[in-house]
Length: 347
Image (cartoon, rainbow, N blue to C red; front, side):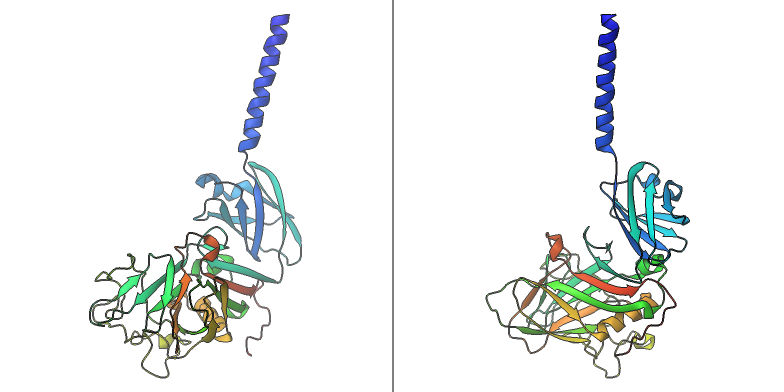
């Protein structure tokens, strides 16, 4: 009898320990972000198995909403669900077959999402940036610095590019009407410098494809974009500071992307920036118009060039290679989650 009791106690103890370990290893949904009437992003507290994450039959949304597809993000703790239509203002609850937690969410008429690099943004992995460094002799290949943690523009003509890939995100969310975009801002973190004088930074829309440099502060490879050469052998990049030479090319029409000009003649924004170690926001109606254009014409999204105008000292910003994720470039878009709504995008 004593042996039986002892054995029972041991089995109970082992069962309790096993259960405790299982509970510790369970995955939970920690956040549900409704993106549109037909898309929602789930964030889990740990990485997911690919097959289990993309089996749409494992998910349930109540009140009843059909789940059509599930995509595991490049960040393996996030899943995008493509669904039938949500109602704006209605409270829903999402669960997973192998997860105990339940998360409520409610779709609003307007939403805000962020693009960049890292776990803190809504959509990660679609950011590219690089600096074009002017060589003093202006004869040899200039540096295309795409692997540095910093972006640079200076009075001698060095500029940098930043581009955010919106195509997959807006396509998956079912947001295809440019009028749904209400406003857009780009924010960059400026490094501190010895001079606290404000510098004038201008933004021009890039009209030709470009690629990040693979190296750091070293001469660009032969097939990399520089001031001296473009990605195509017979298509030279324009003279420093990389701006279009023909008037009338402003970048807001598909016909402007004709392969003859690199950067729009029109300036989409003029901003006073201090090298103060803070994040600065670049916002204008023309920047918002550019995002609307890229939603409608995703194949022409080459981002923006940032350059000094009449500056006297260099400005340094954090790039997507920055070790501190919170310092990396971010694009923020406020938009309507429901298509077909009347929106006045004029000033």
